[in-house]
Image 1: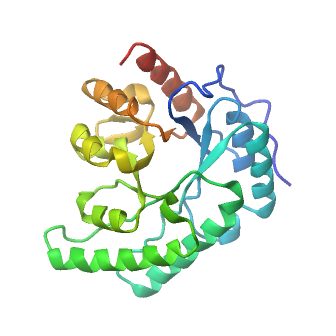
Image 2: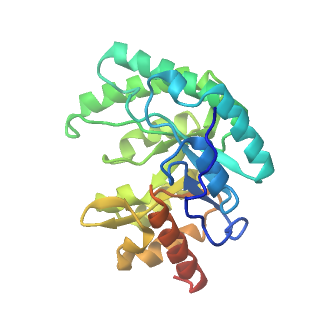
Amino acid sequence: MLNDPSNSYPVLSKSYKGVYPFKLCAPSFIYPDHYVPNVKLLGPFVDEIELLLFESAPADALLSGQEITALSQLSQELDLTYNIHLPTDISIGDPDPVKQQQAVDSLIGVVKRVAPLRPTTYTLHVPYDDNLGDKDKIKRWQEVVHRNLLKILETGVGNLIAIETLDYPFEIIETIITDLNLSVCMDLGHLIVHGEDLKRVSDKYLDKTSIIHLHGVENKRDHLALDRLPKPLVKPVFEMLGQFSGSVSLEVFSFENLSASLRYFERCWDEKY
């Protein structure tokens, strides 16, 4: 039986639906509860929910059929869309062919399971953990990633797959994104932690970006409340958002951080940064 939101949980005090030229989004784990209670509590206040499906196993633990039905109904009742963050504990670029295939099978299973929710995007981590100075290793990784993405695209998911910016130079995967007509998940927190030039990245990839992950960063720690965003970066970030029309997920994981992030976001936007 699905849990209902507890009356003891705090709720947001203001709706941000339809306020911005993009869909403002909150993650599904703001409250210490399951997917449906989180959506019931958050759905009246934001345009979209990022359903976090971080763990691939067991498959039935991701989202039950009952939860899918309930989430579909809530989407209609609350005028809400969903995006999916695919599991992060597997990799289609794993050097072990067996683990590669397990990752592909798992991701295909998730895509098929959540299809009734009509997600706007499917965010995918494609980690690269090897030597960035070895061009042969990079080429082999690229071949593996390309081949395995083709298998996933056979589900018909198309360019709804958004490859997330992680901790390696995004250039090593950009050709694959272009070749397969995929999109980009631009995680601004990750880019800031790794010292990337946000304007350079925005100029190069914003037109391919379908979803932005936004959160505060301080002392190399990310996923903090947005008011911890380094002050010199506030203007570049909001100038970027002013050119964007996809989904912007405030990727924090507590009510306190979400509430603070929404207030800070509103103030920066209203005051023109």
